[in-house]
Length: 494
Ligand SMILES: [Zn+2]
Image (cartoon, rainbow, N blue to C red):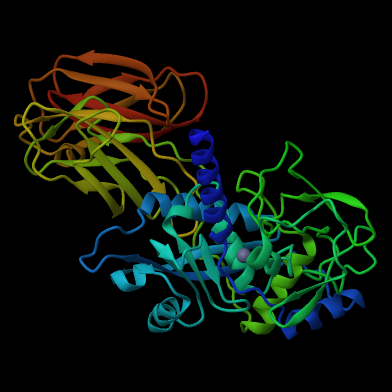
């Protein structure tokens, strides 16, 4: 008996906790502008021009503790940006980071009230960009925004690949309401005891207004709830799980007694992240109009970054399993088209639980700190730019820290001449060394993924005639290894 009593106590406690937790802290209200936009939509006065790309600049504010710790990691930021852009891609709205700013302020990082949050937003916002604040505590919610504003605040715990909180809060900032608009009031006062088996009321009193409850037959969709006719009725004010069709398990009854399940694919609902993946067309039209009419055409600019289509990383120095100087060592890899930055991670363990290097660099090389002599290290590289952030980290490569390489690979590179670099298969290329050496030379032909296609050894680093045999044309890499040094040159086979 005692055990059951304790369990009941625990359950009540858990339900209470759940009731108090607001997934989204936005104080939902419908703006006059959105009401008027929806009236124009109803009269057919809105041009459905979805083809013009809108590319929205953002200022990213990474908020941490007073001593500059606990910032959202760049890798997680990139994962989250990838999901954000996937969420908006269907409607030709894309986001890029104009700047990433670090804010060391524990009061803002861990704010329990909207007033402190507002102080943070006012002190840091950069005009003519969307300002996104990543904090540890977003006033107890996963995130919040002001309806029709230039900012969103998102909790780091609700940020990452497949989490749609960021998109949801941007939706609010671009004027959208929840699909269950009005029902937040029930969530505030009666979230545990509300009986969904009864037909819903005609109106719900929310923040001083009577909000019309949306019917299944669509007769009041323009005035009721969120005011969009392509988002169906939804009364679910707590977070909810969906079935395989992304519909709610919870059955609801509209004011006329018609039963329905909510659509969890909509990002402005409270369905779990695994259900969500889209905005409706009318929601997209409203957000686009909001950018143009309310935000001075924000986003009407060319995207300053290209999309990273290929994410294969090819190590150049050293090649995989090569040697690196323990002091003044460096890593270099083949540049990825359109990538402006890379995250480089070096670890002593193959699973990367801790890092010797975990750094964002511009350009395709990095100088390493002093390494432990004779030790094997693992490394990987993730290419990105401030817009295109979906590429994963490369497979892991290895190197051994050594003292023995006297010359850097780059010197060797300058001392080797290859002619011609545009050749036909079966033809001969000439490899000339500026400083001939009595050392064994290995010449390998690699495809652009680093796969070895051919290998041949020579006895001295002196004028070589090397035959190229390969099936297929295109870009290839010639790896020339002299003793412990190596260089990789591009050649085109036609
Ligand atoms: Zn919300």
